[in-house]
Length: 435
Ligand code: NIG
Ligand code: FE
View 1 (cartoon, protein in one colour):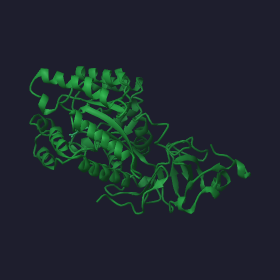
View 2: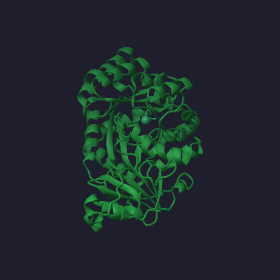
View 3: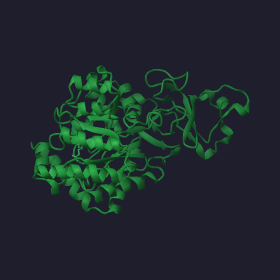
View 4: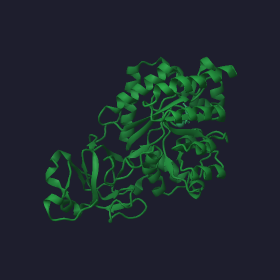
């Protein structure tokens, strides 16, 4: 998309430019002939955009001969100040709409009570379901907005958000409506809504096989038809404490018939058959996969399913980390996400996930960064839309506090993102953290 021309009419129209980057990590090695390495780094790279979409990337020294800078007002010229620039993170797995917290349970777990035991006692997800059902829409909206601001402050420009703390028609609908309202607010990350009514069995259906069947029927016959077109994805927690393979198959089949794209929480706590199911349905992503076998991984790769790794869960649950090498060798497309939720990964900071991916899962920094950007986009079926800095994609990027992206993972536990740009709209500098 680069053009070399001396004539003004061959210049690319733009209304926004970024200059002053030390290194521009495009995550798209083909974005420009000047891009090098797995991350497609352009030394002293620049970006031009028009109406929120990237129209040109390349070395800053080529910018003026390629782009019509006369059309770019001063207020739309961003100077990265000699810092490194990357695509915004695409967080493809979060549960950011909920009320309450579970700090007490976190302490219980460290006193030796397992996550599954807490769930069996009526705590865990159900604890958050009670708090979420009791919260009014205004409270949930304010919580969601403040969390999204914090995602953005840490470099994330697209956030998938799951329902699943309502588990009844009214509350699930309220959570989807809140995501819809937040999606219309400027300056927040893009939101991709997922229906996760099959998160756990709600209390009112517990205690009998017949109750389980009735809840699955209510998902298939009432909720899925009602939310078609409102949620882009349908997800199921296919796990010992949640839904069986047969129940999951029923829900996925119905969702697919209604036009939802599919995701699956698979093989997080045990070898429960979720990964095979994700391959069978050709889900867009299968997430967690801590207990996936080599056969499972091969089946997922053959079916083109993106594997989403969530090291924040391994960290919070003090579990072993799946090793990156197994996924790499299976030839899978990989995404890295936070799984932001109040139970098993209360963290919206993708930079922490990069540190865990590199230091505990033994990914290279390039692999981890690609998984947190383009990989996340792929896990949302949005690889043509976001996840890399190349012409045609949304102008979503982050400016680091330093000159080199290799500080990520190495310098951990602090926010290395100075500024986030979403659809060419930069956040204020310095980024304000949520109240
Ligand atoms: O991805 N799978 C369940 N969902 C979350 C946990 C949710 C919770 O504990 O509230 C997960 O780990
Ligand atoms: Fe999750």
